[in-house]
Amino acid sequence: MAKLDRVEQAEVRTYLGRARDELRAGDATGAVHSCWEAFAALAASTPGILQKPRPGPPGAPAMKLVMLWPELGANLDKAAAERGDLAVTYEKDVFSLSEAMTYYEFVLDTALELAE
Amino acid sequence: MKFGLFYELQLPKPVDADWWPEDAERRVVMDAIEQIEFADKLGFDYVFEVEHHFLEEYSHSAAPEVVLAAASQRTKNIRLGHGIIQMPWRQNHPARVAERVATLDIVSGGRVEFGTGEGATDIELGGFGTPRVDKKSMWEEATRECLRMMSTTPYPGFQGRYLDMPARNVIPKPIQKPHPPVWVAASRKATVQVAGRLGIASLGLGFESAGELGLRVADYWDLVRDECMPIGAAINPAVTTVANLMCCKTEEESLAKGLPGAGFFAHSIGRVAAGFRPGEEHFNREFHALRDRPQSPAAEPEDETTRTLIRAAQRGGFMGTPDFIRESVREYEAAHLDALIFIVQCGDRRHEDIMASLELFAKEVMPEFKERHHLQQAWRAQQLERVDLLVNSSI
Image 1: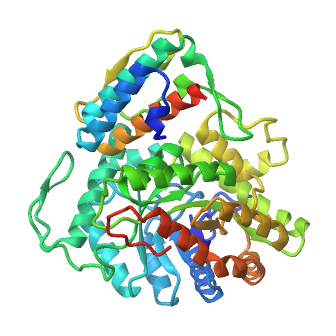
Image 2 (image 1 turned 90 degrees about the horizontal axis):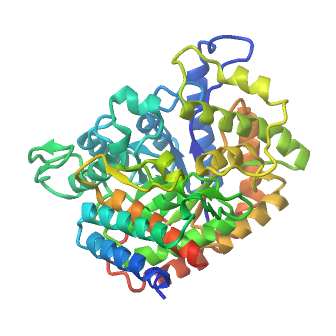
């Protein structure tokens, strides 16, 4: 089963599916925005997710999810997010494919780790 | 499994002096070239050399193309890797990169591995005026255009977000067609995934365990098969990682000769990442003052970067006897890692100890893995069965 199909929350899956299609079409900026929507939906569907320790690699301790959000121009106010106030500020109008891929993989892996 | 070496050209200041001896930089470069020449004779497959700027003590390797060109004239088979070239245009204009990589490919007889990256520290990025928030997109644009410059005649020109260049025939062209194998430095999981999506090799710098890498390898190949949007004209699918090597006849000897260098490596990379006052600090003196205090936390830290630093200072799986190291390599081999790239020169590790370690590893550990590499190649061919893309890989 493809990784995306294993995401449990339908809304998150929808946004990530849109991001995947945008990536395939070369619309990196659209994909970054869709990834944000997916992340916001994930946070809304899972209270406390931002403060939730995210499993680290074998032998490593967990880390708060909010601290792991990639800093590539779609900026999350991490201090506000720690208080549960989730908002993004776009520092640039255009994103590259590699930036969009980074956000996509981060949100997808986060959703899958929650599902497990 | 293939094997390589990884050079930062570390040069700690003497503890009892404020500056380096006059011939220190010459010596570290020439010793490295001698090690590379020896590694070539021993059967190592790769040497990668970093590009760093202004990172005194941590890395005096600002012009790897020069060192690799020198090494090319003293070696026959070892592949010469940039580990990596900082691709944002303020550090290196992509046309100049294309020219240099092609020229190195020519003088080496087609042995170049084109490693790419962004640059990481504020000292470096700030020195060239590269905004941190743009470095990934600058890397991507410059890498894509650089590869087009190597593989198209003439290069039709490009007006992008950062690069604005008219049509020119960028010459010389590399021997390897359409261009040398492409890599990206990947210290984080997400970059390994981006590498898979763009069809380039991951030069892992995260000191990952075999277990972690097994998961990343599976994910990487899924992306190569299903989502690959090649950044170049040919893909170079591969997952590798760096690790610190000191192979000796006894455990005690390996730790005595290996750990101080690894400790300095981790201390100095942490210091350059945090920022420092150029020309005014002494990382090695700091390291010696700190090394006798208890440093190791009971548990690994949360942050991926900090965790990497901690792991870099530790023994890992490749500091020990040939038997100990052999078992570690087998774990990575089972995870379908394509190559292990060893840090051998670090801290004040002695040239003679590095040469002896290389020789012992090559004689007592390497052979069985080289003999079995055809199995990995067959496994890779299976992964690529459904991939309808041109492949240029030395794995």
